[in-house]
Amino acid sequence: MIKRINVNIPATKISTYPVWIGADLLKNLTWIPNGYTNIVIITDNKVKKYYSKNLFNLLKQKGHQVSLLSFPSGEKYKNIRTKNTLEEQMLKSLCDRNTLILALGGGVVGDLSGFIAATYMRGIAYIQLPTTLLAMVDSSIGGKTGIDTPQGKNLIGAFWQPKAVISDITCLHTLPKKHLINGLIEALKVFLIQDAKSFNYLQNNIQAILKGDAIVLGHIVEKAAKIKIAVVQKDEKDNNLRAILNFGHTIGHALELITNYQLLHGHAVAYGILVEAKIAELMGILTAKNYLIIESFLNKLQFYSHDLKKWDINKIIQATVLDKKSNKGKINYILLKNIGAVYQNKKHYTHHVSNKFVKNAFLAISGVKKYGR
Image (cartoon, rainbow, N blue to C red; front, top):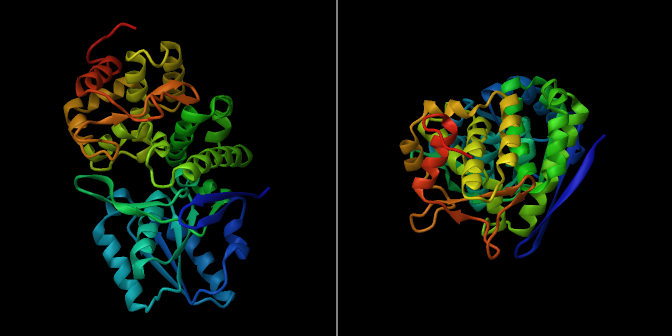
């Protein structure tokens, strides 16, 4: 079954684009819009082996002028150097303002390609073709684009909405288990902050998900996409409500930075969820029972509290300084109130937490220092 969900962005003019979810969408190009002089497929070297040749040939058969550009896979290549290289290749190919970019790949490809689209010729069209679970449930939707710097993740970028998001569930069949789990954490995140019912569905169907059950995965992608769409429609530019989508990410991004991005994004966020949920528990916002439910679910995915002993909490805290939710040097966090709900105070969703409190939460769950419940 193929499902379509519209995204309505209230900007200077209403911007509506579809999110298509279904099987074999990359073999059926009815979603390709007319009127573009050039189509540029941007992908990474790993995804290129699986999907780019067939997509390239199908576009050629339909009479499109197509270019295929790729770069080495991995978060460490989501940087200004890669962006410059790809843009120079587009310029040499005489790509103009009537060029359409197809971002074929995971979150790195989508973020980088979207940023190129936002800045090339001061803005051209692009379509997200996510091939990973993480990209389907999160990064392909909402128009956040960007690159990493030595100082932190996604610190340079732009809000630039795609013309469409095409989530072909068939692509998940080639996804290694660790990358399936990587995306599953982002689905977990949105369910924890907005949808307790879907969290329960996740718990009850975890084995089917890990076995790659297409029907269950399609349901997870649809539910997660609808939640993110609802949030983005209310707060496109991340001024308040959209910040809730960063639950687990303050610590998660810091872990990515101090490990030089050797830790997968979703895996880093899993540990971030453990720490940030513990902060909420120690502050009396989240019950100990609900914390244990979250911890137990993450344990099933092989994420354990004692794993945190591998990292220095002082380095983690130092790495949170450039978090985009920080304000005047104070680090802000999303605090979980309940499974399916975040804490808010006077319609504010981010809350300052002292470094000392963060450290106590980290030590409490890592086993370095024991705290009573």
